[in-house]
Amino acid sequence: MNTSATHKPIKSYSSQELTELLKSYRQPSYRANQLVQWLYQRGVSSYDDMTDFPKALRQQLADNHPLFSPSIEDKQVSSDGTRKYLLSYHDGSLVETVGIPSSERLTVCFSTQIGCPMGCVFCATGKEGFTRNLSVGEIIDQVLVVQSDFGKRVTNLVGMGQGEPFLNYDAVVAALDIINSKKGLGIGARKITLSTCGILDGIRKFSEVREQYTLAVSLHSARQEVRDTIMPHVSSQPLNSLYKELLSYIEKTKRRVTFEYTLISGLNDRQVDLEALLHYCRGLLCHVNLIRLNDTPNSLFHPSSETTTHEWKEVLERHGIETTIRISKGSDIFGACGQLKNARA
Ligand code: SAH
Ligand code: SF4
Image (cartoon, rainbow, N blue to C red; front, side):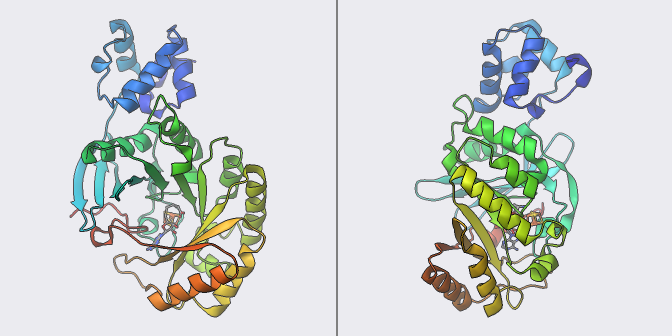
């Protein structure tokens, strides 16, 4: 590897790649673990702080692999305690991340891309278009920012911020690997959920991952024509193929899949929609998470009524499908699902 010519930021490397990089610098094997600890446990922002590294190595790394840390451009605090951060990365890119406290937990909803290319019509991020993928460290840094601002350990993670995780698969899974690892943040795999709009090859690869992460799939309709209208860019990955992919995921991992279903009045909340969902869930080890649509600026869509939402839950459960209704936190600061779009207060 011609390391010196790359000038690749150090936080773009996976744990495995850091090991190879330090090996190429003829460093002992424990050095890679130390580097991960400095970067992601102690969260240092300069090589000078890595006091147990030889000076020459620090210099070599600084010359060849810039070390960047995000800054907090803006922070908003919801009446329910949720905090939304607008982070700025070294190239000026902005991204939002959300910290959601509850009695025993601190959950981070992290972003995986700047913007999103999928263009789902009800989602504020989708309306922004896509700028770039986030790197491994840019993803992990979101967790560190929340942890340090709250002054307590993050316990849970959901990949439900800006972007489509499976369009940035390698960086996202490499970030989870460090977040999960004892030498990184040590957050249990079972406390980590990734949400995808249904990128099939991502689901396939994710089924090979050994760690017990949870997979959530944004279904939003089990009727192809409706789904194509509200999630136009996943139309090439149809519901029947998604079904087969999920069957195989469940068989391989023995893990339950969560379906996210955002209820939009008059669009995907009719009797035929419910019947289609019941039919789709048949034979799949799944759990349904109903979400009442959150407001986005200038949106043409409205949430389904509370009555409809509760009726859906009742019917689904009567058919043996475990169902929850997501209580959206932070909606007064536009920090809830689908509301993230880099706005300042
Ligand atoms: N791109 C991924 C993850 C980010 S979106 C995905 O789509 O799954 C996280 C969740 O918020 C998804 O289920 C998404 O469909 C949902 N969502 C988007 N806009 C929303 C809105 N306005 N109200 C409620 N949920 C929304
Ligand atoms: Fe992207 Fe998810 Fe929003 Fe769709 S819902 S535009 S996939 S972030």
